[in-house]
Image 1 (spheres, rainbow, N blue to C red):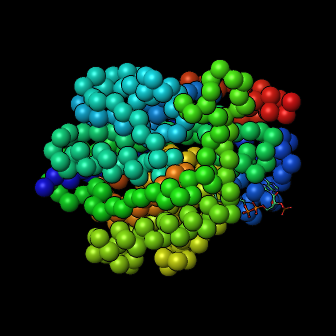
Image 2: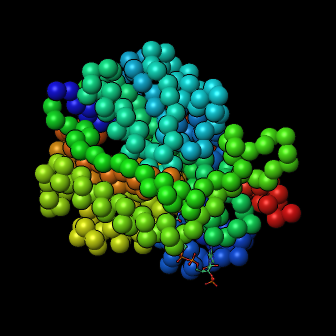
Length: 355
Ligand code: UT7
């Protein structure tokens, strides 16, 4: 039996930051409302494309694993904000990395995208089809934002995270998983004016996010905690066996509700929504990377992760970490410098939305 160990991890968060105080100069909101309702204090906005964010996160993960891009068999990019659709974004990432021997594919399960992609790449390794993959979740959610709408403008941010998977005979990596989709409610979270359903010859409005927040909130808590229960049963583990919970970061109150349902202690739960907001598929990839950097993930750790997103997709995964929690080599991969502030970066979009 083959397994797919996570041997490298990396993230790329763009430098331009918009604090709650900053965003309150753009829409009618306050730090008090955003902090108390969501736990978000800031979000980062990107001056580069989704593919560039993905490439830096992937290169950092490759350096962390100590392997060369040429040795990859698969570049899989989970995103709902692709830089380009045809050619796919993964092909640009493959080119930028120099991963000339790898297949390159995008996948989209919105906020559940990283766990879905992790499951797909792991299955290919377990089936013996490939030996090495980089699974990247990269999002530029700021592209969808209508800066005149306070209900959604305050929630999202940009960023990317990546892991390298390598075949091993040891029982490591993704060992149990469950994913699904409650499509009867797919209308409560969607992007308007995007895709081949639109008539491209008619004047259309901007492609923006629509959602029914309180409904998604309830379904997210139920969906993610139910999926965690399923995965624990599948892996024949109890919650006491779990060392770290890495949940999707959409709202601190959702995370706390799941934590309460599962009865997990505070110090086992990875939270970074305060700094990044909701980066859709990238939240878990970034949070997993930061959980290692913070020392929460120790050698041999049992990790539970759960996500929920548009579709309405959901997924949970049990990951067994290996022995290494430090990078094989330091990475020099960097984004180009960003001379602008967060507010300067979004100024044109804000002006267009407020017309
Ligand atoms: O992944 C896609 C999006 N994610 C989610 O939807 C996550 C799940 N949902 C949530 O996290 C929460 O539902 C939200 C954070 C989106 C909203 O929190 P809520 O506690 O469910 O608020 P609400 O939508 O029920 O709105 C309460 C009030 C409303 O005012 P009234 O009608 O009570 O006068 C909103 O107009 O809060 C108002 N409001 C705001 N006020 C200040 C909505 N957004 C803002 C804002 N600043 N940014």
